[in-house]
Image 1 (cartoon, rainbow, N blue to C red):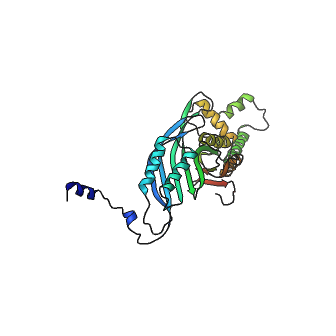
Image 2: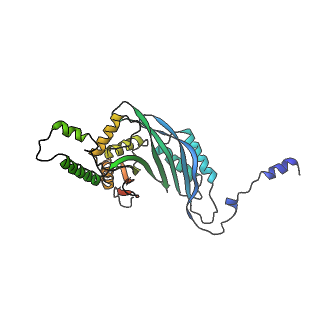
Amino acid sequence: MSPSSNENLARVMPDVANEVKPAIAGVLDWVGMGDIEMPVSVSDANGRVVTSGARVNAFVNLKRPDVRGIHMSRLYLHVDRHLSAEAITPQSIRHILKDFLDSHADLSDQAKLSIRFDYMVRRPALVTDNSGWKSYPVQITGVMDKQQFSLELGLDAAYSSTCPCSAALARQLIQEQFGKDFAPEKNLDYQQVLTWLGSEQGIMATPHSQRSIAEVKVKLSQEFVQFPLIELIDMIEAALKTPVQAAVKREDEQAFARLNGQNLMFCEDAARRLQSALNADSRIQDFRVQASHFESLHPHNAVAVASKGVPGGY
């Protein structure tokens, strides 16, 4: 046998996944690759492109019980080819899923892709001309089920919540202190009262506030050509009215204190505000929101969940 023949024989590599039958037969819901490291680019309606490091999950089902495994390398190559070449859109997610199924035509009729990344946005300060960067965790999930395509966009937004109960209790204590410091039978001196209101003795109790998170998942209709990330962020923050701030001078902090005072809310209030805002957008087929308030009073969180109420939905 010639050396070249030996070389050719050596390059016939075994394919155990296809050549060996499974020891136990059975269909599998999902098989694939989790937490693939990949850069991802997203374009908004204004043409701005944001690139972030992402974690990608790529799966197909295995509908044949007699086949041991799928072609995982094909999934990776499809993901790499698409995400490296273009900004992701609803249509590009559909194309990736179609490639998954085309490359597994004899094995699979369902495909799923999820992409997790942080979306960085420069947001303006409340009053001053400053701005700063804020990060919004995003998860995009597409599913192709026997040629039926569905798309979910998930986004987390941080906000501040001031407890209405705590505010009422603080107001009561301030009233009681005022009654002690200013006898009812005496004529009140305007300047003295004004000075008292600006003192620590006057405002001797404050309501508790906490950083909170709105976790929003929406099922998108086919009307969306781009992922409405900025649109969804604006919708969430406009509904809650107290988004956390990046660049803050004293003027901005004072405006933030005013917003908190004017928007006292339990987690139930926050969930209903989000529910109302999302219900008003007919392009959103279904949604689930979770408002979590990381209590400063308790060692546990206060949580409220709401959905659109679509039969068979969230």
